[in-house]
Length: 149
Length: 149
Figure 1 (spheres, chains in turn green, brown):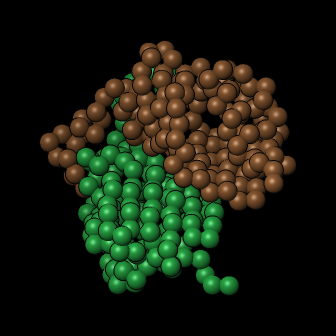
Figure 2: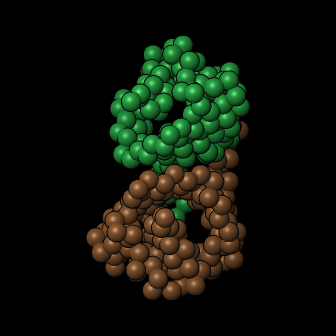
């Protein structure tokens, strides 16, 4: 039984982020890949949709320019024949300020002939924004009224 | 072939939210259910972890007290024998102020004998907070520097 396409993609992705080399990754991404990380694209230019291998490699380089992955725990994974979904918890460091960031994300991916064909990623963006800006936005916004809703 | 456990749970859940009746839901939730919606629990008391059927029914009533589901699109779904993961896009209305909210979420669920045993939900919380508070927090926070990272 051959290895599921998720694993070589995951290894190549994490190597691309931490070692800033995308050669391995190029081999496991389809030319017509469809990519989206949902979130506030005005704040983080590496969020949003990308289409095609070049655009995806470029956005992965951009992520690599900003973050280092210290560790990740794959909390849940579901594997289909040519599909995979996981929930992951990441411990990251921002490269410019050496700030620790932890975030949770969920992804749904589809593969074709061992290459990533599409991926949709949802990030716990509110938490991410709070950590990057080092502000307790929740407290700022709710004032004395926690649990206002 | 019998129906996957996700579908009766999903129907009962949405009925519980929109019709505020949890009878059907009680039949499809395990007594020892383990539940979590990740997000800023200080802002939204219905987020966070719940353990056991009573606590879960209570939090679902709390969600029902705050929101009505106008529509949802299941953008992706993966079904395992006793597991399911989806990405969904919801159009909601807040009941107190009749405000439209749209959000995307991902869930990973496990079932046992047709009942929900565990679920982990990740919501695009930043977007949710912006909509509920009707503020462009991204603009507030980044000022003139969109794409600051």
